[in-house]
Amino acid sequence: AQASQGSTPAQKTDPRLWDLTAPLALEHLASALQSDITSPASRWLDFEWIDNELEQDHDSVVYRENLADMVWSELQASDFNMEIASGYLEWAGLGNMCLVCEPTSTGPEWKGLDFTAVPIRQVVFEEDSRGGVLRFWRHLRWTASQIVHHCEREKDGNGKPKYPAPEKYKKLAEVPGEAATKYDVAFCVYRRPEIPEEPQGEAAEEMRPFGCCYYTMEDSERLGEEGGYYRMPAVVGRFQKRPGTSWGFGRGHIARAQVKGLN
Image 1 (cartoon, rainbow, N blue to C red):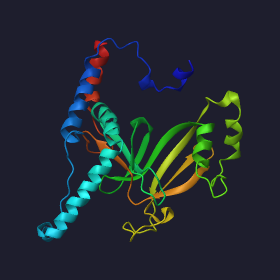
Image 2: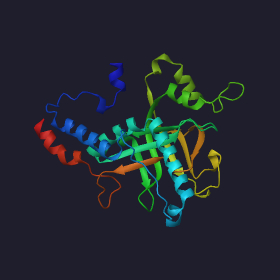
Image 3: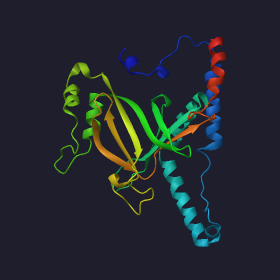
Image 4: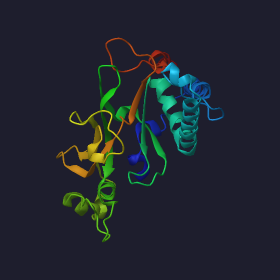
């Protein structure tokens, strides 16, 4: 019962599902999309100079190829293939996919990339003038223990948390009966208009073009440090984008009536 309460509707078994044609078709379509677009078995990524003169210069081409090799190696070493496989299921079925990419460490030591396929039901975003993501929100449900862990995972030189968690959630985390209670938390990424879009060299997180933070939705209290990105880390892919809407149109929208009637 405890596990069932903490699961999402997509994880629960639906007793009304009698025919497996649609779920299997979705899995086959998602698998085919991954094999054709981002196959783990073959290299699908490469770069090309926009400037034709650079594309004809030997040293520039060598630099470009080395850069592409580095990016490809980082992708293969990360969890990209696993997360994009999950994303394709929502992309084909619900018409939308959200993928977030960020470094596994914000410190000076590079530790690779971390990808997350975000459930589309948790996503709210605002488009820029070109249809990209300008502002991004993710609705999370965290326990008090998760909130405390997020806030206090970074320690100072004395072993004390750099950013103490709110006292309210620290007290709730110590109450045994509150262990399974979840609270609404939002993760937000936003453009900092006062900072140039192309910073020169390496910049501290507070001086990067995009800022990010977690906050509680009940009392709008920030959780932990404000972070930063050089680029918007969230990408929202639309399967078929119809005019006048920010969202895509997937195969599931077409098949839903037939699947419901058949079951």
